[in-house]
Structure formats: C-alpha cells, structure tokens
Length: 421
Image (cartoon, rainbow, N blue to C red; front, top):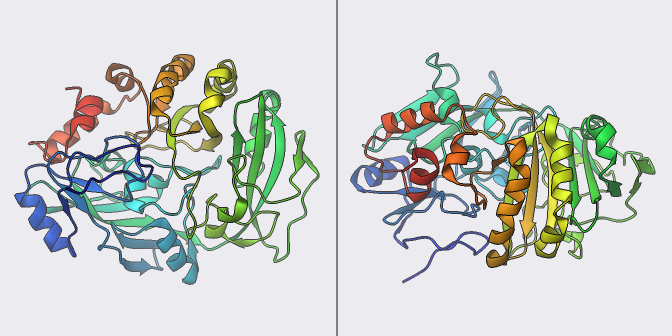
C-alpha cells in the first residue's frame, strides 16, 4: 500500500485512499457519497490539518484560470492552481497580486485557507485578496461566499482551515503589474530594532530578516521594493549597520543561491522578486520542519529579545529563522485578525524528537505576547490556550456546524484545536 507523506516528509497521512477528480461534478459526487474526506493541496502543511482516516481528495486536475475580469480587476481560478502558474498568467495579461509567500509552489486555495502570508507593512496575508469562493458542502451542493454579501459571514469563510467544505473556485482581487528589485544586506544587529523597527520594515514594499540565532544579529536583510527603473537600482553601502552583500545569498547558510530569486538590485517582474525561491527549483532547505508564531507589532522587539534569551536551545536545531511584518485583517481565524502583526518563523533541521522539546520553551517565552501559531506548521500549544487567542472562535465553530453539521470535513486536528473535543 502506498504511503502518502507531506512535502517535507515529516508527516504520514492516515490513508492512501486518494481521489483525483477531473471536474467539479465529479467532486460533488465524491463528496456526497464519502463519509469523511479532506482535501490535499501541495502537501505543504507540517501537521495533520489536512489529514483523513478515510478519503483524501486532490484537486490538481482542476487547475484552470476561469476568468479575468478587467472591469473589476479580479481573476477567478480553480482550486488546483498554484501561485507560480497564476503569477505567470496574470503577468502576461498585465496584472499582479498584492502579495506572495516565500514559495510559489503552493496552491492559492490551500494558502488562503490557512492564512499563509507574505511580507510588508501594508500587505495583508494572501487570504485578504479573496473576493469570493465556491464551496461544495457535505451533501454535494454548491454554495458561494462573497465579500458582497451583507450577512457578515464572509470573513469567517476565507481562512476556513478546510472545515467548511471543498473549495473548488476562488475569485481574487488583482492589481496592475509592476516591477520590483531585491537587495540583500549582511549582519543587522538585533538592537537596531529597538529604536528603528518602523524605519527598517517600512523602508520597502517587503522586508525579511533572517537569522540562525547564533548571536543577537540578523545574518541577512532582504529588501524588496517597487521600481520604475530598467537598470539595477543603486544600493546604499549600509542599512542600519548592515553591510551591502557583494554576492547573491541563500537565506540558509551554506546553501547555494541558485534556487533563489534574483538579487543585487536587478529589476524584474513582481512575481520573480516577491518570493524568495524560484518556481523551477527546490524551495527552502528541502528536508525540513517549520514553526511560526505571530505577535503584535507593538510587542515584536520584546518578543525577539525573549527568543534571543533562549538561542542556545534554538540555534543547534535550526536552518534559519525569518522575521516579517503583515498588515492586520478582518478574517476571523487569521493570526493577524485586527492586529498589525510580526511573524517569527523557524525552519528546523529534520529532527522532530529534539524540535518538539524546544517548541514549549519558545511558546513559554512568547506567551506574554499572546503569540498565535501558524495553523499548518508545528506547535506544542494546548487547545485551551489556542482558543483564548481567537475572539471569533465561537462564531467560527457555529459556522462549521452550520455548513457541515455531521463533521464530514472535520478530522482529529479540527476537533482538537477548533471544536475543542
């Protein structure tokens, strides 16, 4: 029997019963007759959020761009479309998305369902671009949720964590295309964030800080900015004490920069600069584990200092850690709900036995700042604590019960962390 694992190889799914329908009608038929079913995207989750003991559903064959609405500046896609594919389509038609994750390899629908994000003071997470979504409910019928509806429910559906049903179509708000350049600086002292946090993160369209936590320094600063120039942007020799990189960089020390997007201030299309990694190469470190925690921007410097206090526990297990800002949103289950946020991300070496011992130490240090974990990454937080962090959780629970009263789309993860049973 074939065993299905996630992208990183750390999670084994509970069934090998995988359905790969070719159209929406087949999805409806499958959903109606299956007892329990969950959708797999690109398997980039690091936990059991998309697991099922009975049936797994892949929408990889539903991968069309359905419509481009130039009047409303919106695009409608099927659920199997990945960001890399959508970006190429939009760019060829003169459009762009407001934000992208580090990886272009993931599906749009899967990323939005888990509040996956990019970076930028003014940029909401990827789900904030959603205007409407088509969902197949447990009985096989289709329902559409839209921002145009006035019942107040839409904000609960976008970051749906896979619990509402099978999302088969999604409409996104889009922007006119633009050019970007990317510059990297080396060795930014952590203490610079004490007085210059806003200056650093507001300096460009998107800013990422990378560290291995071996000392109180960010090894690299990645600065992504809009540009109107066709030639390389001039690079200042220093950035708040960090020195301009003299060659291309990979965020993970020791890794080749070949699979990273273009740097050195060379301008290019938005979708070839906003992610860290190129579509045609292995992303990130490859075999790895990931955790991520969101804190209020107001608390970010103190939270980072708290992490710095336990770096001797972290650095031996770590490939790299990334710090980014994300704008607040109104989506019920988003970690950035009504909160200007900073995400502290950890890319771990594939040693789960050791990593699961350090996660409670990190979470204890971040507890005073009410840190919210990324839904699809690894965390140790107990359900009761997680529940206390989401004021709209009771409303979301009722929404799940209304859309899926028998729990066809719920699994152990959702029952534990959302339903509390």
